[in-house]
Image (cartoon, rainbow, N blue to C red; front, side, top):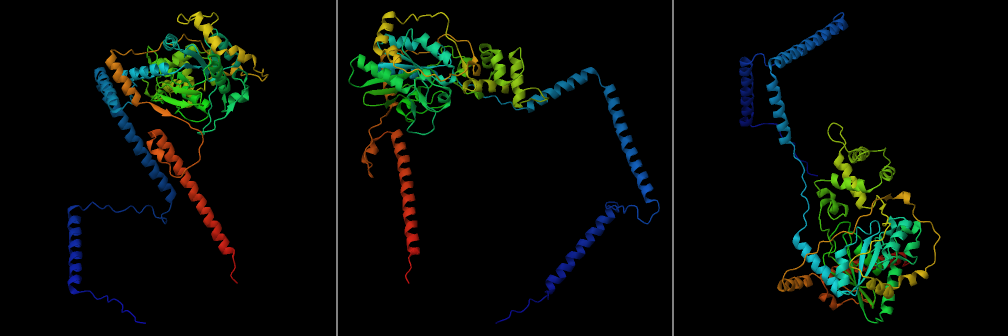
Length: 542
């Protein structure tokens, strides 16, 4: 093997003398700085040597002298401050305090969220879509919140439906949030005017095969209320089927669904269809356009995007109906006060396990303390307590319910003739006689908070001006319609050319479906390849 020679340590004279010259220059510079600043580098204190006798006593004396010097400096500083404060006048102190406050306020950056404003153009589009649903449908389902049915009724919608000669049915949704006695009382009260159906929408997370219970909604037990299954769908379909038989309708009927925000219109449709055909959400405005969903060959449902806002449009009303986000509200104390005024204080105290309170501010302070929300100086953050109360109210954590009025007040726009026609057309009493009584216990009223019932909420319906404007708006609204159809199950084909003509919603659905099929195919091929490989390995060629 060839060996390499070691590198020589010999340095060229050019490099050698250059290094010597640089070292001499550096030493010369240090000597020059030493002459200019002779005391720059103080000698290090070596301390008391160990060989010195009485070393411990000397160290203690040095420590005492050090502490005395420190105390003297602090006393001199305090005396100077005292003398300075005596020389200053009251006006100078006030000016300094004002200046510090202004500096503190200018340095703080406050978070001021923009308050959500509802565009007036949206009201017009909502009214157009609502009117379109009412005109196209044969039967209108007005979805009400079972916790406050009167507060979720809109007289303007009911008057529009009745004046157009259409049939109106009330659907009490969210019955799992109220006691059974309150539900029965409200059904008895509302059925004096219009046919009323109790309903509990499905809360299952899957997209298809949403389960339904065949037990009557008025007779469900506690376990069924806590489950995610839909209750009341079969009874509602019987009511619609009874209407078709009484009117001798053998063709298709269209059913429109209307109501206030977050009463569960789309959830009711999904539960009837047993699939997530309509988008749902906890805030208002999820449904952007009219959607047509086919339940079967006899019934089609129109989902109304026309959420009907309250006529007053106050921040309190919108916040308690979960129309706007709590984070966007400037004033959160007023809606919280409205909740506390309507609710029973004893039940609120038991719900949050807080001591007795005498005012709204006291309850919000107790809630803030429980949450651990404090401001500077240990002051409870009342705004955070108010936000917690409003969120619990909107999300159903506070299971509030109302009682119907003791005296029945008939609506002026509903005549006795219309009431007789509706009872004859749907005949709910006849269906109720066929129900089997269920002896399961209902929800105890102590689990909820009883609040005062409100009057029917006035809706804001914008009338259009001029026929030309109405025509153009109708043309625009037709562009926003989305029709969702569900045909019978067919044989799967690999290359389906008809998918190209489908709308955006169906295209997105088909793309997801194809991607899922592709993943399944890959998984199957990988499995087959692995099994073939294992078979080959197990063979012996001896």
